[in-house]
Amino acid sequence: MKFERPFLNPVPPTAGTSLYAELMANVAGLPNDELFAQMIVSQTGGIGALPPGLGLDEAAFAALLLRHFPGMQLVVRHAGQIADPRALERDDVLALLLEHRAFKDGSEEWMAEIVTAACMASDHLWQDLGLWSRTFLSQLMTQNFPTLAAKNIHDMKWKKFLYKQLCEKEGINACRAPSCQVCTDYLKCFGPEE
Image (cartoon, rainbow, N blue to C red; front, side, top):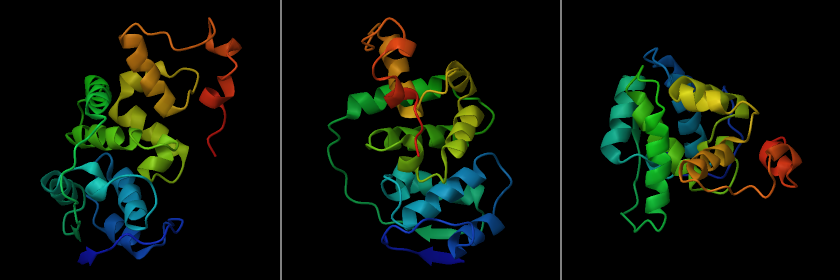
């Protein structure tokens, strides 16, 4: 079945949507099927911050669909290439994620690119990805980047955690206090994301 969807007004995604039902009826039974389905449904509904094709180029998005949802076709209109002022930051986030991938499924590379694209947006990472709750983001991180996820022992918000990892890698201590527990910004990093 072929779906062509423009970007619509944001509508909360539900498991009952026809696109979601169609995607799930065509899953390949691979890791990330459910996560990709949520992101695709959210994106086509105008929810989240991912660019067309979940931030992948047209060929990679088509390959993702073929691998995870055989028999499904989605037409995605990509905008022309524009200069990325955050290219170096994007490269650093992508490298961090790829360094910690599980090496269990090839879709981890696509997931790293998608998460990187979402990190460039300004909301909570699970929302920017178009996932339906933070629980799914924790599943994504544990499944695709387990050694990185294992480092988040205090359940820090994921986007802040990723950038903290980059700062630590460069030897930059961005925290204003000797430990997170006494920092005045503690709730911004560790508080609820709802």
